[in-house]
Length: 177
Image 1: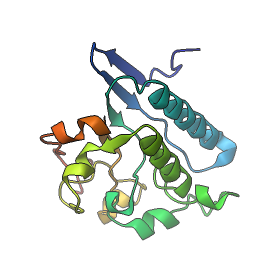
Image 2 (image 1 turned 180 degrees about the vertical axis):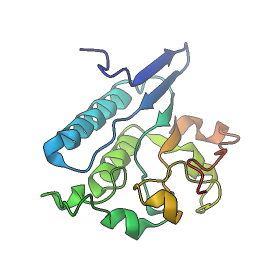
Image 3 (image 1 turned 90 degrees about the vertical axis):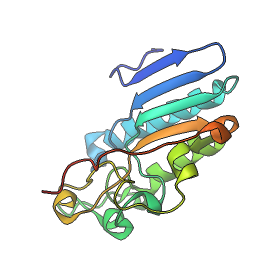
Image 4 (image 1 turned 120 degrees about the vertical axis):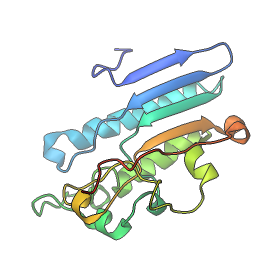
């Protein structure tokens, strides 16, 4: 169907640009739960959309449930090695914290590259910012150990990047009390 069955997409069409808001499905921990395939399908459809819709600039925002680069997590080694109850997926690229697996990060990178898109926050903030640059605590243990991920984004077409005046995160996600 042309509509997202989970209601995870809001698209506003303007004369000169599109604004897309998405709540991406979580990759999950285990392939047998079908979550890996669900996320792969989501990423494939998103890639197709951004490429096919390149006639207008795009502003894409929301909970994208992925942390693209090491700089987008507080503890890359922790999130890369995370396991749920000792489970190790058959494909090495699916290992780690959902949202920080190599497979997800590669697909997200392909969406950005092929869609000619730029992460507005990272465009303005090239350095890691432990106080403001993260929006979620990741792994259930993460919130108690100060481990955080940035999974909320504003993505813009390359032709809009010079017009981004500010992109800030307010708050720290789940409080670490």
